[in-house]
Image (tube, rainbow, N blue to C red; front, side, top):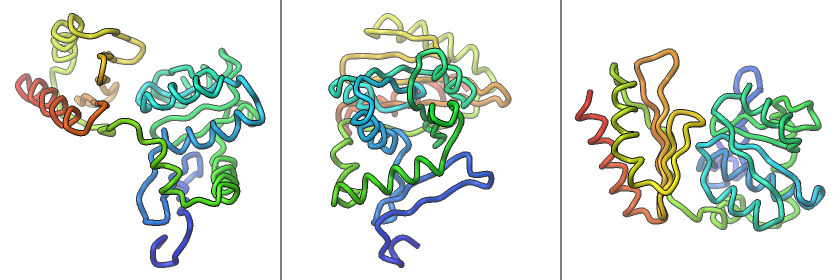
Length: 225
């Protein structure tokens, strides 16, 4: 529809409008981490030194760029309740999830998809650029998105991953599942609370490295299911 109508942007709300997805003028989906980075860069002009909350699935470019702009980025567990609590704890002015929830302190930390959409339109108008051009400037790394694996023995697989990858990683976080950070890539693996499913996210400095590590981790999981 975006391409057919020659629209500058596509904005899609879910059924109860607590989530909002954005599409560029080519009809390509813009991930929530890149969209929130555009929004955060706009908000930090008004609130210098502001803090922002994001779930731990976001591209590391988010934290890098917020720091460069003089702001602070705080990680949160996945889930809108956790993001809301983290906003209150840190005094952040906004927060977002990879699942396209956008929260703003001005709305008591609750979701405000409409406000996110209005900010996106403001950014687009004032920049004079196409949304695809704005997003291209933000894509510093290669991100897999969330990949689900059916795994009945998810706890054993998680334990095996911790044993194997903890020794290699520069940093290990158990904020939500396990997140292993290396010099040029990272990955997060989380068990579903309700299903026999593992959720994996991988990000790397290069596309080749992403493909390599994704294949490695897929083989690791499949060999244990």
